[in-house]
Amino acid sequence: MTPTNVQRRFAPDRIAILGGGPGGYEAAMVAADAGAEVTIIEEKGLGGSAVLTDVVPSKTLIATADAMRRVNVSPSFGVRFGEHTNGTEDAAVEDADEAEAWADFSKVNERLLKLAHSQSRDIRTTLESYGVRVIIGRGRLVPPHTIEVTSGEHSGEEIVADAVIVATGAHPRELGSAKPDGERIFNWTQAYNLIEVPEHMIVVGSGVTGAEFASAYRRLGAEVTLVSSRDQVLPGEDSDAATVLENSFERVGVHVASRTRAESVERTENGVDVRLTNGEVLHGSHCLMAVGGIPNTAGIGLEEAGVEISDSGHIQVDTVSRTTANNIYAAGDCTGVMPLASVAAMQGRVAVAHMQGESVKPLKLHQVASNVFTSPEIATVGVTQEQVDSGKYQADVIKLDLATNARAKMMNIREGFVKIFSRKGSGTVIGAVVVAPRASELIFPLALAVTHKLHVDDVATTFTVYPSLTGSISEAARRLHLHVTDPED
Image 1 (tube, helix red, strand yellow):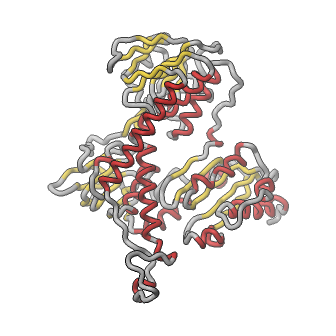
Image 2 (image 1 turned 60 degrees about the vertical axis):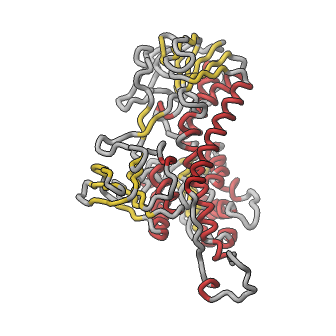
Image 3 (image 1 turned 60 degrees about the horizontal axis):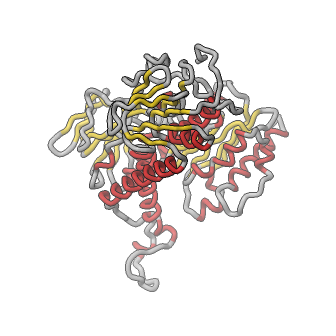
């Protein structure tokens, strides 16, 4: 997308931001720190859905599930529960691989919602310490650069600015035949209403959100069925990683109904019936709909302000977050660039830097590190296996299983791998996949390598701690060195 006008770059004195999610609040802090007068209008609370109903609460739920996983497998480490028996345990206890913890779901959800609201308050306090004015309410664009507050205590007030950033996020997509009611049928903002672990949760949608919730609910003790329209779960992720996750699902008892879709979801006396397009009817206690999101762009004056919207409702932006309207920028899920909080935050920061005339590095999506918070986690950055297989990139590839890693053995990690892609001929690291517990942390050195175009030898010759999971990263890089120096290999 190319902006319709040559846009004048200047340092605006007044910046108005519509939406308080990561794209909005990060932009507000950067702009205020640079001396601009900043006003942010947010309808539900600072942090937006990322903090209040999506990323923070869902990942807190997942962290609880992971804590239960670690407790349950602790007998395999020699950990015992109950009265110490001085070595007189019976054989059944001695040979046990797993214990059985249980989740007090009312406490689990109470904690995660409390944490989410605490994080929201912290963000507001930080913004106000920067001098940002925060207005809780709904806003609407009035050309050229005014935001009218249309609800809340300040309803009717107009915020006049030199530049505007739209960061309104997205909301869950709903099917007409599967309306969430917040009691038996949920979207991903309502899942925290439960006060007990569901007996049988049917998760519709096998993308990132669906896979994460399926993994978490199973670890928390629920029976889980995941409805997938594709041959494999996580259709947009590395196929080797998806296979590891599917094997993990099978091992822990997640049933996957593949190559079918949910046609309808209906409440029954004691649960739900999910009718599939293949004719099968699944009976469960609850259903979670995880079928994507819709951008919050309707009815906020975008078209009137000259902002181009795609057929999907997303705001069209370029690599420095400009829209097609002069001095109106956009960031986050409302742009459809990449539905990640980290990307939204970067879009917001880039927008402020550009409007203030600073040197700007355009957003480069191949440098974005992303993570799927399943068990195990799946982290990726850069070039993908699919792009290599299709011939788009010429690369040497090494996939090293964690089974040989000493620390993995100590931690009783039985599945996972490190995969690195290096450009054929040059040896530059151009992509990576990590499947492991805390893969979200392990991907960072590989993201550095991709971003700064490091050679595999730069990774291979960097010291790692022994024993550590990062040792497999340097080992994979060492094996790639052989590919780089020996074209016949």
